Length: 359
Image (cartoon, rainbow, N blue to C red):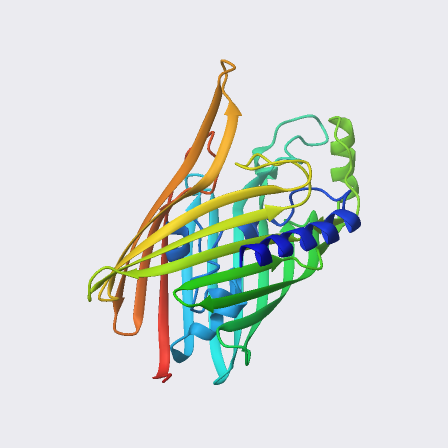
């Protein structure tokens, strides 16, 4: 199995490096934050063990794990001391005994941003009544499909996603991309692979600035942006997990993931010009499958402080959950990932099983 995972990584690297070597590193980063308090409490170590409606985001192959005919989930969190709002909703329905269809929606936005480009009137006077507000918002709409194959333990899934990014009335972008995922059970172990933006995701930006705004930008020494295409390069996520039964009522799930990028050196634990690997792991303790305690570590960072001292950090996350009949309520205490300014956020999510239980 280790040889298979290495082979997948090498093949993925060959494709990405040969075709998209000149593309930028970061794009559509709002889709890297994660969804669901369960996953966030485990430091996003979730592509292998995910078995519910949130699999539409993490690994569509996991949608086959929903235990009812339908399942729905909602999540809300706020970042940067409440400045940015992050919302998520999803619904999954079983088509038959071997396939599931899901839809997911993500919104990450900063609202009520002051627009001061018209603060000074034609006579050179400051007029605060000329200040307006706008929003910078990112949306993602994801359609997922999962299929159980005839090979025992193997599940496959795919995503088609539409991206909408908007900066007030000034600029906007439409994008489209595909993901592919797989899960495989082998004895007591579970393995997974998730290829995000497998064909690359292209955002076509359109800029719409008034003549007055262009003149203001030029007079203040700014460049006037133009229409462009933004590319999100493929990323490969690999994972392994195992569940341990401590007693008849207590169990422990452990999962480790490795996020692999092929666009040059990144500030992660394992880095090189060819490939960078960001490992993270999480655990979940369960009591009678009703009460859950979670923890995880990840986001290794190395930076230099104001005195020139090199500092290495790693981010811990924690979370709890409870199941009340067909309702799951989860909470996580998690940071968005900026280790220079630690601003942990409270993340709440709810998941509901709908209709009859699947045998």
